[in-house]
Figure (cartoon, rainbow, N blue to C red):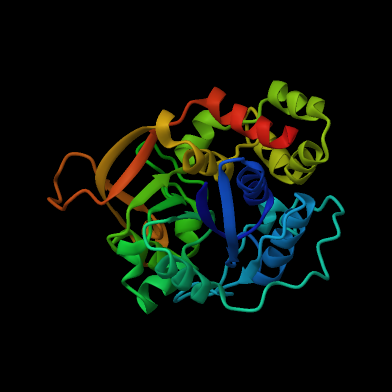
Length: 308
């Protein structure tokens, strides 16, 4: 059984990705570490705890960083709702996280089981960058690092013309992790909007499954779905779940290994993922970028999780 450590800024699509991992028969989620991003840290922790409880699991949830490495937090509550879970009335309060700090958990778990832990990153990389700075040796001890972040090789951005939210929210952290030497696999927003769109047909199919988990997945996505439909998309997209699908089953993905760096600073370059496709920079390839993930396979994994 594979061992996952999930770092999350738990909002609606994060929660669905967590469900996929918790319900998969070949995955053991060792812990969730939580970072501020889509919502503030305290809310993200409560959202993670609720999701674990809904799945009937006892996976420990640890609070991590409440702020980016060098910046003030800017959330995505205008997209995900004030509570990050679509403001659909869930009781997202009153639960207690595990004792311990998220950054310490990342370091201790990876170093305690070298070559065995897959780190799946669903939010800004503040916790992971802090872990790398504290214990650089984790870069060689972690088995895989699957990151939902960046714009891939296709683009576009979703928070600026060229930047994706997770990298934009803490670009310095993204730059640190990208340059760290970790075995990185990026699943960008481009993959979500090409392979993980919840069309009306798929929305209806989710409802037809009829389980509490399927209903949960539909309900918490309503704020994002309204936003997507108002902006001309066929439906909401699921970036964190398709990243989790790749973490669970990378065998069907198409991948290009390329040299990548993430731009920090402000303005239009903030959080932009620079991909050297033509070898102009001359640096060694450092990231496996997913360039395609089959939509049918993704939704099969998602629906299987909802049926359990």
